[in-house]
Length: 343
Image 1 (cartoon, rainbow, N blue to C red):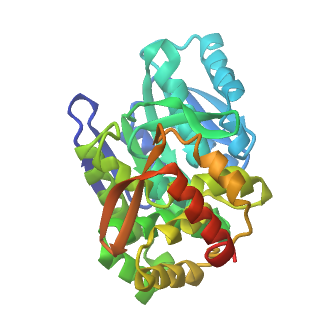
Image 2 (spheres, one colour; image 1 turned 180 degrees about the horizontal axis):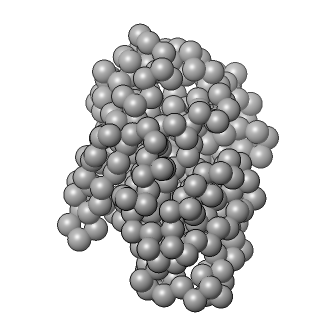
């Protein structure tokens, strides 16, 4: 078992990584109290049941699968369930699922009685690699992703690679896009690992390197006022594509992968990243309306007036923040629709 420590002063917490950690939850987490276990229909039901068996007073809520669950209505449902069950400030919430479950459950924990303990047990590659740590919790509103939320750190995170065994190959590949992002932004050897081997056979190493990368960034900038914005590589255009094309079947990681390509500012790096995405079955082309994607990304909470901060890179392992006029992004999207990821 690997143990990482997220150093954030009073908000510090441990991240445990290793096979079989779900069975050790009773020893690693404080479960001798009321525990709201939040999961969804896409997660094997026995995962939540195995956690519940280790709790003194478990309350399982199984939600519909999909991005639509990250809503104010579902947020209210969780709050009402805790209220009706008599939860107090000494009780806790545990997420057992992917990023949707973690974001929603974490936001409910952040708001109930002004904040109760939150544990995250991610079950997808995307959440194990990225979203389970860092403290971003949120719901969607009006078609805009994560526009209502908070920074609220978990008390502990258990990353159990064995839970990925039931994940469909496409979902696994979608999650790997976030680790590929880490390699492009700050860890060239991780990108090389994806190129030279089958990273799916080395998930423990992939997870460890990706978690270390994000941990280091979050420790420098917990609330995204500076360096943490580097984590948004691929997400600006990616979120726009996801808002417009996600209902057509594209997954979050697939959209992030597509969004990375226009941010590679040299042909050599772009070809390299494109080859890695293709190797793991991630799309490198999508038909999209540039005006619709532009409209979606202008709602992005990272926008400030007529400019937006984007992350670009000319060389793997070295990324930079750049503030650009929104109009230049419109031009870029039009070009990509005709000659790049849209062709």
